[in-house]
Image 1 (cartoon, rainbow, N blue to C red):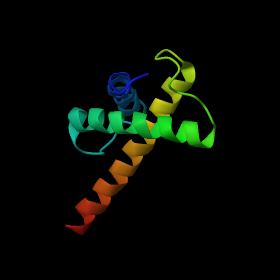
Image 2: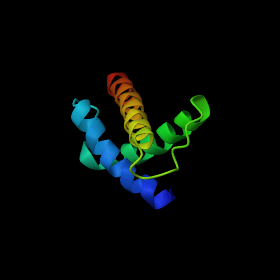
Image 3: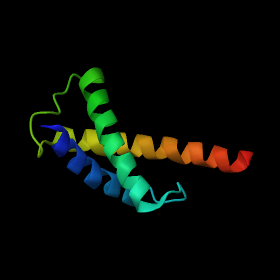
Length: 90
């Protein structure tokens, strides 16, 4: 799976992560999609390092999708935490 596939997967995973974790993370859908792309890459990296899962096998592999969605959720939570800390400091 190439980088374009990970970007497309990240777009979808970001939307799924926003639907799972609605709230006041800030930034709107565009930032959520960008965070989804970053989350898909992070999730794929973590799955391959921690669990020795080859997420580059296929676009339709369940492990690939789960790692992308979980990675997107992690990045979205971290983003929400950073945004909430920044708004309280100002």
